[in-house]
Image: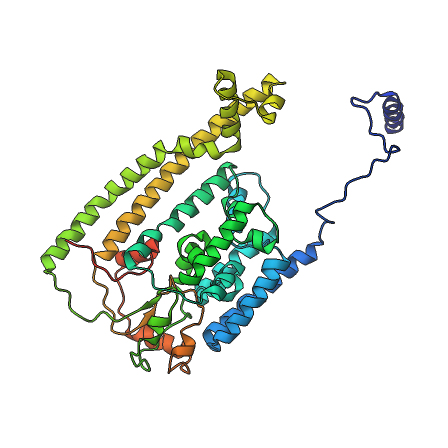
Amino acid sequence: MKFLIFAILSFVTASFASDRFPRPEFQTGYEIPPNDFGAAREIIFYYMDVAILFAALCLASYFVLKKRSRKGIVGLALFSIAYFGFYKKGCVCSLGAIQNITAGLSSSYTISITIFLIFILPLIFSLFFGRVFCSGVCPLGAVQDLVAFKAKRVPARLSAILGFIPHIYLGLTILFAATGAGFLICKFDPFVGIFRLGAPFGIVAWGVGILILGIFVARPYCRYLCPYGLILGWASAISKYRVKVCPDTCVNCRLCENVCPVDAILPPTVEPINERRSHAVKRLKIYFVMLPVWIAVFATSGWFSADLISTFHPDVKLLRIIELEESGTARTKSFESEALRVDADVIAVLRTNSERAKKDFKLGMLILGAYLGLILGAYLIRQSTHKKREYYDADPVTCVSCGKCYGYCPKNEMRNAECGMRNAELTPKPSSIRSLFWLLTFIPHSEFRIPN
C-alpha cells in the first residue's frame, strides 16, 4: 500500500514539474542526425576477433617454425593487413592494449576479457615460439615488411642509439595511461589513418613517411619505436622453440646474415680480442661502479622534467590556460575556460586534480629516469664483455621471425626442433648477471667494442 501511494505521488509531482530548459521542437523540420558509430556489437563478435587472433598466431608459429615458409608468412601478412588493418580499422590492437591494461590497474577503468586476451596471447606465444606475432600477425609489422624492397644495413652505433627509444616510449605510454593523460600509442599510431582511410593530415603524413623510410630501413617502427615489441623481445629471449641456425648443417655461407632485414643474425666471434685482460677487467669494474651514478643522474633529470611533461595532461593544460588568461598573458580566451569560469567550485576541483597529476608525473618520471639509467649502465656493461660464439645464430630478442632468411639458406630443410636441441648442447651457459643485463637492455645487437 505504501509503495502504491509513493508511486502515485511521484507521478503527480512529475506531471506538474516544470522543465529546466525548453524542450526541443521536432515539428519544425528538425532531423535527428545519423549515428556514425553504428549499433553496439554483440559480445560474440569480440570473442570472434580473439579467436581469429589465436588462429593467426597458430598459423604464424606453423609457418615460421615447422613449415619454414616465407610464402606462408607473406600470405598471413596480407590477411592481417586486410582483416586486422582495413576491416577492423586497427582496433584489434595488442600494442594499444598496453594502455588499457595500465589504466585498468591504476584506476577504475574497466578491462574486458577480450582486451586482456588480445594483450596476453602474443606474449604467451613469444614465450614459447619467439616473436611470431611480429612475423605476419601484427598489421603494423606486416605492412612494413611488405614494403622493405631495398633494405640497407643500419650502422651498429646508430642502431644502438635508436634502440633506446622504445624504452622511453614504453615508459611514457605507461605513465600517460596511468595518470589519465591520454593514450599515446593510439594518438601516434602511424598507420591508423591509412587503415581507416581518413585521419588528420599530420597522422597520414606520419604513416606515409614511415612507409617510405621502411623501403630502405626494414621495419623502422618495429625496431626503433614499438613499445610492445620491446615486451615481446623480453619474452622471446627465453623461448625454446624459435628461429635458429643449426650448427650441424650450417656451411657458413653468410647468406642469412646478408639478407636479414633487421640485422638479427649473429655471426661467430672466435677471433681473439687484441686487448689485455687487465684493461678489460678495469673497464668492467668502472662500469659497475658507474651504474648507480647513471641511475641517480637519469632519475634526477626525470624528476626535474616532470613539470614540463605534465603539461600534456588535460587538467594541467587547462589550468595553465586559465592562469595565463587571468594574468593577461593570453591574447584570446578558450571555450573551455569560459565554460569553467561559471562555477568557482569546478575551478577548485580542477586545481586539485592538476596538483595530483603533477605529483604523479614527478613520481613516474623519477622511476622512468632511474629505469633509463639502469638500461644505459647495463648496456655499457654488456658491451664491455666478450661474447663468444662458434656458429651463426638468430638473436631471439631482435628477430621478428619474418622468414626472409629461409629462402636463401641451402640447408633450410633442417627442421627447427632439431636445431634447437643441437644449439642447446653447444651453447655455453652464460652467467646470471650477464644474462640479466642482456635481457634487460634489448638494444639492437652490435659488434663494435667500447674504446678504452
